[in-house]
Amino acid sequence: MRADSAAGPAGAPAEARVLEARVLDFRPSRHGFHFANRFASGPTVRLGPFDPRRIGVADASAGLCGGMAFTVRDLWERRVPPPPDREPPANGTRRFTALVRRQVHSLDWLRLPIRFWVLGAFHPDPPTWWSRLLRRTPLGELVQGIEWPRVRREIDTGRLAQLGLVRAAASDPRRLTANHQVLAYGYRVDPDWVTLRIYDPNWPDRDDVELRLFVPPDAPARLEQSTGEPFRGFFLAPYRPAEPRAWLGAR
Image (cartoon, rainbow, N blue to C red):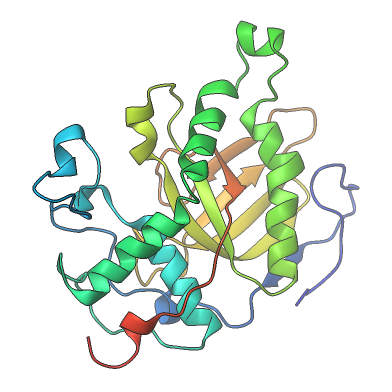
């Protein structure tokens, strides 16, 4: 699994060598969906005659990134290739319903959106006067000290890591849909930065999409995504396996 051994960037010696690891031969261009996380507007769930989109939720056009990432891992762990389709499944089809189901699973009984909200609203980075007063750890420090080591352990043991990407820095819960979910399948550790290689449902067939955590000595951590989207931090999200029946055989 490991190409070398060295300390991570936090507290790493100056002579630390480059370290790389990845989950076997996983590649987004081969094992991810070939369609993007772009679905036509339409309800993902129906509550009798009531359309939940009236209250601003359950619209497929907001994306199904969690369901796509969960399903890609389901397929990977069972060595089932993804379909060759370049267009997402239409609303109401068996495969669309399967993605919605996995999207709901990815929300972890709403614990995931709550975590997005807490990290985005109450761990500002750079810190503010009130976050210092309340001793709230800046999000970048949480990523560097807690979440990155967790993700690294997952990859080192040969498992894809489900990540929640914190993009919204607001207490308004309506901003929660700005956040995102991806799969990490590899990393590279250099003396002053960490690079995570990811499958991003928004960027199909791309093996070059990365998250970067810069941790220079005596300076605040800085994070960025190679594709340019706003990115404040990440955390290891829970994954629960499921049989990908909708993706076996005919549609």
